[in-house]
Image (cartoon, rainbow, N blue to C red; front, side, top):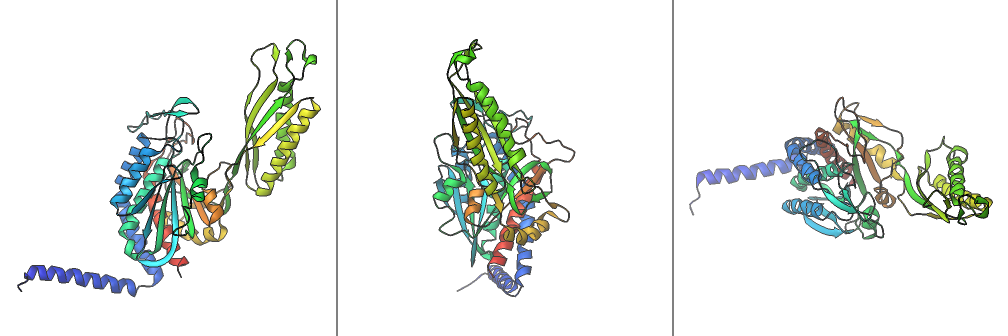
Length: 444
């Protein structure tokens, strides 16, 4: 049999290269192998930066509300399937999940990105500005990625591509979780991380630890912020209906005024934080966000409805707030001759960074961002349903800088929300580094 010499030489060169790489990895210390992988991740993240920005802009221009992320899910699925991953769709309505099995046995790490947009009409002047319209609570509304979830999805798509290329060298597996409805499912529906957990997203294979990030328009590009323990508050809504007795506005003594009663309840609720909470422990908030009652100036209505939010960074404090709201509302109404009904809705738990995992991975964050670029922050009274994953397994949630140099943050959930896309590359590198270091250390 005749074999062309150039083909023979080429085959031999590839074989020798494969043998060399195999011996190189085999005789390289574990920490050096991890460092080599992180160097490759850095190189590929830089090369993929434009593509990640392209993905982000597409998603930004085509936002979808919670539990309605149909096209976003298709876009993600097409990318993951192109990478050769087996993809599960329809998780918690529109979620997308894929598992990358590494070439070596080891633990399983989860990476999560949220997909949904908000009922906000965009006001920024960018070429990929959203003009989408959706339906929210029965109303036609503008739809915008006003919290940066589009960047989270694009970052995780980039991480999936890079780690797939390094599949043979990974000492364990990675589960990519693209989650719908972080902002809350529509009324009457389940959704988000809680439903994903209920449907078994952390099982088969069982996830040992999970990482997530959130872009921040107030944190300078290139910076990472984090906190051990509670980093974001629990969130619960409360509803109070005050029942009075309707009367003519000119004769209040002939009725029971639920508006005056509601005003007294609101004032008294503020004493929960100022007088009942040990604020040197943790922060807490009670806010009444809306109140409705009455139809005209000279009618004392029969009832008033109010609704608000409860935020806490300590579970015992949260439970005591629940008790005080119930007691204050009902007793204040009783003292006024009225009656109050209180409902406290199921909400999000505290976003709690596992202390051991956090301490373990701080060096990884610093290695990705650089010296002086990783700082601890006070807890935030915003909430995140990443907390449902952290209730089940150790998790680390951190913030990624998106504020351009010299910029002024417009604020999340606003029409002028803006992110400097140059911060996305660091997000890709950081998640990639966390995977490599966690798998290497947890697999020992």
